[in-house]
Image (cartoon, rainbow, N blue to C red; front, side, top):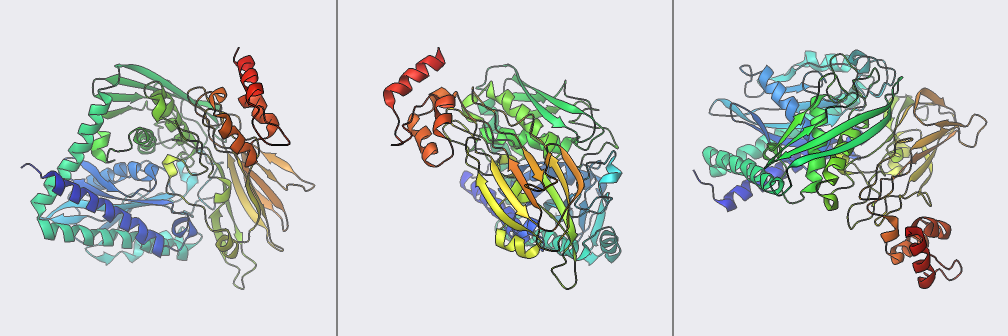
Length: 582
């Protein structure tokens, strides 16, 4: 049956709004700031036609979450194939059962029609605490997956509408902050119930078969559009490469190799030649690896609806036993940011050889600090766990026509900075500084984001324990089309104190003392295009904004600026650029 295009678009947009409402429900009802402020979760609506699972709609949240969720939903449907009933809600977090890393919990609720599960609202959320030997779920000392937290094979949290209290108590018993965990879990459940109600509303309004036809239209439309774009690319093999600093264990300079094989209207993204899996916790399971590839491709095409139809022309080659497809029980806890970034970066660098003006800002490097302790400011002195988000975000690079804009890059584009005032109320933290660093932006025709420096202080009487992970110190984010690489990442503990120490890789369970300062630098992303092609007026604006000094303007851009009048000296600039280009 042919689908009216207008009706197909109505259904597509409706389901997109359902996914957004799921995310909003999570934001408004979760207890943890990681959700209600930072929005580290993603919602989607999935469809099962009896053969395969398809993502049909997702909120504009975290691509690395929702793209990977397709694997989790596939696994859950396969596992419960003949054992799903109306009212069931299932969940999983096991990286070796179609998951990514243990903190990412996936909850899914089947919606039945004609006695078959057809639609599956699902939400994936990064739980701030997941048990295991290390509070906060990031354990650089892990050498297998069991040391990373409490693994959950598929379980039914609700069975025919009734809560399995035994499973909830099992989760509580394996969590350091059980009340918060249960509150966040209830928010996930509520989001899925909201989506079920909305799905039933549109089916009741237009009819089951009509909505199914519109779903197929949506998937086929995205596939057709992407194949049309790929068919314009010259057949060939295009290579990209990225290098991770370390695995936080004994391996350094971990290479991710990517070759995009373009053949007609199909591509194979091949990671043959990538580093073998490591003992440290940066190995990436296939769902996570694929999500970074899809995220990279999604940045190239800004007007094609992103769903499983978009994925169909893209096949993946992920060699087993490598960092992009490790064999159990390799640890994987930091893969969603660390080696994931390099998977995305290598993919984008390969795409640069095909469509250089469409790439950039698709990856990120992080300074992560999972911190925890007892909040002695409060009478009950509760145990807390949180993440230092102000140290991590400013990693976006430039793109053609756009400077780096100082925000989360595409794979984590839903994340927002938590409110400083609320953070200082909720946790024993005082922020003293958060500012761009002069002369840290990668020089280019369009420059990268300047590095962000953040300084925090412990209040009186408060000892805080930190697990700090640094990547991008030696191998910062790459530039494009001749643009420079970004600045490096690092942290300094006991800054300006007697025990001042640079952290350029990892610090496990470092205890900061009352009054101690910690300085973080999150280096910016790479630039696009040669610096000598930058408009001198743009360089002057950066000087006036104190992002670039007069000396750096001359050194990197060949732009001569009068230091007193702060104007570009046109003739001197032309002469200097000619000399630098010679």
